[in-house]
Length: 251
Ligand SMILES: Nc1ncnc2c1ncn2[C@@H]1O[C@H](COP(=O)(O)OP(=O)(O)OP(=O)(O)O)[C@@H](O)[C@H]1O
Ligand SMILES: [Mg+2]
View (cartoon, rainbow, N blue to C red):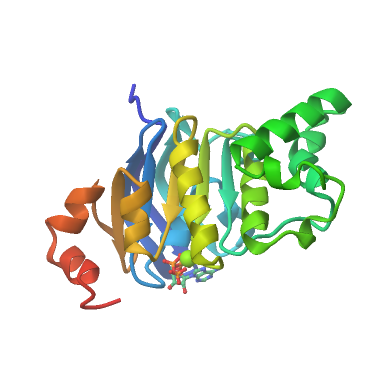
């Protein structure tokens, strides 16, 4: 069996008649950060959404091929709620729930039935520490999450995801709504989180991909054109289309 955390083989995805992903082959190792790049509309969000079955909510969406998490088919008998706790997601725009800082982070575990106050408190503290937010919020855990700054809110969303003890964290342009300082903190955090989690990050910033990822995948019009060592992709791509994109000739 493959050692990969994630293995995608020959995945096709359709929205009605429109084919948004074409024969995608992709893998992610344990404790690896992979970056997805490519022009707007090429299928990056569609692809990561397929990995925790967010596309299930779209009636016209149809997927064929294989997506394996630890060798188990994501689209097989796996329970979707379980899948989403194993494969977490952080979105472009920070989306804290309309509740306190503490309740945001505790939310998922409470939904799973955890009631023990001490364990919840420990879990929340650990998640906030891992998300590099604890020091800033430890005295305002009961305050509304919406009162945090944008960068803090995004780290809170990362903490909320970490609290579920996921194996993979999907991040869809997690810093595009943030200023450079907040962005830098999230990038440092990603490098730190890699010690424990596998991460896929969608980004439009190539310097971000090169700072945080070991491998980079270039998508174009629903195809995965090239996937390889990040340094190689940026300095010596094998496909002309990758080269054109990274040198800014289109996209
Ligand atoms: N729910 C949907 N129904 C129909 N078509 C969709 C749907 N969501 C996305 N698409 C189409 O699928 C293609 C890929 O979209 P997707 O959002 O995955 O691109 P993207 O690479 O994430 O782009 P961006 O960089 O702008 O976020 C686009 O042509 C888009 O219009
Ligand atoms: Mg997108």
